[in-house]
Image (tube, one colour):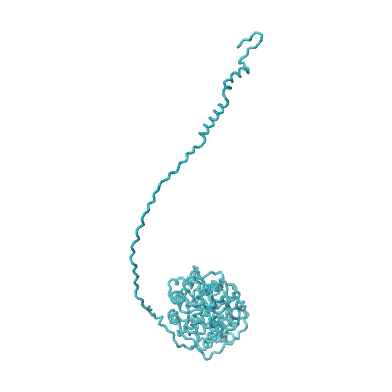
Length: 556
């Protein structure tokens, strides 16, 4: 409490507020501090705080330079090598071959004439065949009409190493072959070797590109069909290559050559390795997308059988066992074969191929029960062989019917190719004898249509099977067939024909081959034509007759 002064009545209050003048007096000491100092103090505080917040950076370290001394190390002296001493080899001696009992088999210059003086020519008095035997290039299993297979065959005779065995081909040059025929066959084999694909197979379409005759000119077909056309001598693409490879191998084995011996051993070995790679677990060679796989399989199996029979190859036996079993599995019950596994349709062409392959397998030592297969096949041939105009005639897929033809080959004549296959199959299965009336009748029918170098008569497939069948029959039928067949082939082989004298493999790419201008050339191409005609030229030396006697060219 403060007393009021006199003259100025003033009330006493609690906690009186100081006036403005007293407040200014209290701030005088602060006002006396310079503002610069305050600013400095604040900056110092900021710097101290920043010191603790900012990361500490270590000062750079100056690099230390080390003085390294390089000391030269002396190389050790070269070791003293002892003088090289040449290897000592034993003195060369001529090879000595141990002649086996089979090697001692020599061709018999004589031959039994299987001839019946009462034989009469077959005059084809059959009624016109109303069945449609025209072929599609790609037949189906359901269609009873289909193309014939690409040629080939098996060896005649009765057993491995015996009469008709492959030992016949082990004689020098393989048999009693004329000098001219040796030249023809050699040229054909060389053409095949020069046109093999690098992988080991033969192609119906790329054989020209595969040729090693790089500097030789190409002329393609010379006669009748697509003359000079670069694609005129080609066949079907891919679908027949396995069969062509097997057929080419048969041409080499027909000359006694294998993957181990002969001029073309490397060629055969490459083909053998390629074929082996195409075999599936069930024994089938090649894919089955196309119906022709049955022909491909049969030809490939036969080729490997002949390789095994000529020069035993143990690694092939299990493969051949499977391949043969596959053939047996494909046969229709009580009948023959056609496209596929038990397709229920039959034809004489596929059946003949299968019989030939089984015969070759049996002859080469592959064991299997052939009796049931042969019995059923014989039933099929009996079913399609009919009396036509007083003579027996074997049909393609119907009793007494005509042969089949590709749609592109309908202009070619019908020929007794099925009669040829029937004769050959029945003789090789021991289901007939050359003295049987039906065999003699069919043989006479064959010689009514002799080989001629005319477009409508060209059928290499027929020429091969007819040559094989008639050679087995022998007698006058073989004599009547042999000369025109030989002339047709010798006068048409490229580079050796009369109008191409002076040519060689170096100058002509087709030298040694045949133009594929026959009824089946559009399917197999030049490889087919060359291989099958080569097989025909090997009939004398390749297949002994069933009686074990071999006939040289020009003999009965």
